[in-house]
Image 1 (tube, protein in one colour):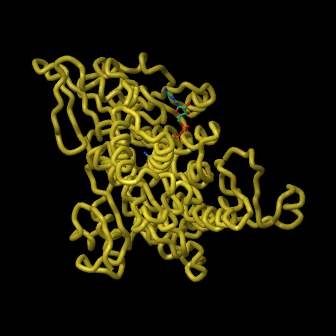
Image 2 (cartoon, rainbow, N blue to C red):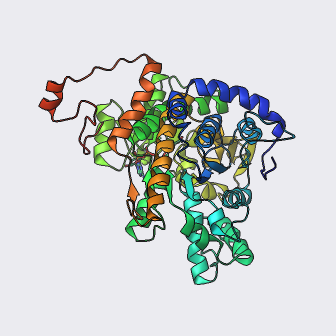
Image 3 (cartoon, rainbow, N blue to C red):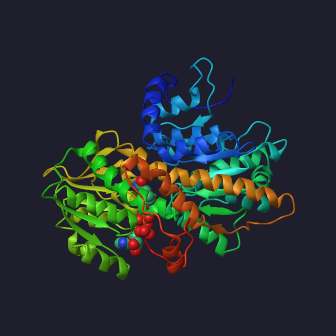
Length: 492
Ligand code: NAI
């Protein structure tokens, strides 16, 4: 079988396959879905354009989607997050060889440039024959952070306008690469993205930041296809964002710097799901954690959990380590970085790199960037005194840039939601084409009973025994014995 793909090194496939095999053991949710749906092939006919960190865990997701009948093209959603051995194994496939790959077209490698990144994003939509007939192209997106969805929306918008605009001074630098990618595609086919958008049945979105972008599009009446917000399944955000970060944040800091976390003062910006996991992990290592928040509810939660809550201004001279987790922008300014202790460590685990003002840091007079090792840079403010700070992964997701992201078990829970959401949208949105209309161009969450199903799939593996409601107890609570057990407004 021959197909296009662009990865770092296909000879790494064996190392990747070993890791995938071990990960499968730790991903009971995905393996149970293969068992349950393998025969029925509910994703037969689905052509999924995937944009999500190309890690070992994602490899198990991809191979679950194909086991359920889907065809897939894949890119990473971050320039540093690919595990090259996982990418190689996915391309080769469980039964292929490097000479005769049988897997999936992947366009991802660790350490992409931004221009390369946006090229890979365009490749997941470059299905053979799509320019002649959009129905040959992707009919589903599986997104993390919303870049793939944004590319289709911007492409269709500029095609309708007949031109791609010039970047404006207020646009982030990266947007220039998006515009460049789309300008090129407009030259090749002025209706490419319009056709792709019309053929898409929907998107399932993985993370808080991507979900925020989807709700903005839906609010403005601009969403071009239905979306399922996977992030807000309880078994996603209350597990992956929290317990995943609790594992992969300290892992990233330690692999990058090897500093002892015990005794350090760590400033965690944001106390949402990710911030809670971050603060807990760092306290667990013996660090003294200071939280910054803008939301009084989260600030009070942090205080009740025993953390000092302060502003960054107050904490900037005390911190040894600063971690942003907000999904917002301009959290740590260049001037704040100049006030930090000598050799303070600065990193981000929010989705985009605009939480830390890296552009402002680079423009400080006399500042010098020294590479300690890939994804670990010392920014020297004063060569005479040697005063400097250490920035991880250039301000991008450090748990994926400096380590390998969340562990398999928690990603099994997230990705089981993804698979269920893909089946739901693919099957139900198909009805739209038959004149029924179960999903509008809005953002939906999965029904609670499916959320409970994902949790159920993981209980055995952790030795948890569930108590069953009696019929009388269920009637008393006003629920069904089989669930769902909580009302929609319940906050776990
Ligand atoms: P969330 O909305 O639960 O939490 C963010 C918190 O930051 C909120 O409580 C908000 O009030 C606070 N915040 C906003 N602006 C702030 C500011 N200027 N200063 C201090 N606090 C501020 O979101 P969640 O789920 O915790 O996700 C946060 C980010 O992490 C998102 O970008 C998400 O996409 C990303 N994420 C990253 C993961 C990773 O593996 N690195 C995993 C999951 C999510």
